[in-house]
Length: 477
Image 1 (spheres, helix red, strand yellow):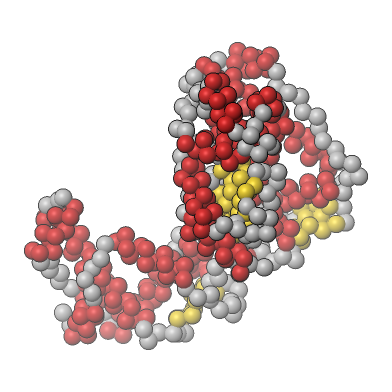
Image 2 (tube, helix red, strand yellow; image 1 turned 60 degrees about the horizontal axis):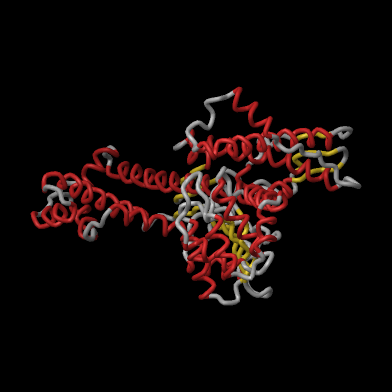
């Protein structure tokens, strides 16, 4: 091995598993300081006198970048239409809504006769409710389309396509549509689709950041090869050099993976080569002046709206909106984490909003029981009992009549009022509105949270929720 490469080999520490490498990379991107403002549009980085453009970075994964851009455009375009509807609806002297016609038994039977094989995989008791749910969804979409046509009748609406606009950081003052003489600006679109746009922009940023680091390494390796007057391929072979794996290393890895020494040898050899190349790249970066100009999108601040959901905690405490149900696989664990948060932060105020994005009778049944118990002061008691119960199988209920009656006798709940409430269409409508609200914010799967404006998705432990609340209380406007 040439002398100049030996010093790099000496710097290499003992290899560690690839998953840890991934964790380090994620941590670097998560904790890196905010880059400087772009000196000029389209510039991703500068290495000494060498400029790397965003176009160069995007070209490294052109198909993926184009997919993200197309998704950004789709969200932006859809949201323009929603904002136009909202502006027109707000201008009405009196709300104009279409009266919905309830789905009848005849409608369900007609559907089943026309499409007899639909929902045959479901238990017989669940087939009609499933058809009803499908028909109600279709009816709501049809009403929305009719309402949109009614709202726009007599108005001149001009859409200004976002062609040529960098939707990865659209300026708020850009006019994206006109309703008669009233402009609709990008600021309103950014506010309405904040989370959906942020997720796509964050995905685009991560893709560009990965590509950029690869391009920086590629430029530095090419430059080093030119200085030595050899090819890039020969330089890389010299860096990797000869590898040797000790018997002790082979035995340790083979034992830990329940494999043979010969099967793990290629992995250990690859690790050694990888670490040598990594160390050499780090040395090339050390004297180089590297400026990165990619900007990570800021986390959006979402509205803290509890609706009319059951709420626990003092009115003056930090606020957490918790979107969930009791049937999703991780939701019981999410509820346990929320309860742990209440122990860590006794002043936290938690609103339990329903989020049932798919057809699930068991989730709807539990949601109705929770809301109706809350009306009589029995929310915590019935919630605790539901969380103790195993999730019912499809077609089954949480409680039979006898066990439900026994439970209600233990709670400050009048049985007749409770049963009337559970069967009421108003409760069903409240649950549906909660779900629609969560989806409109950009959430797609339960559980989801808004911690003092900070959006979170998926299972979060109590400490993560606590940190998000602190961030929202101290950092967000």
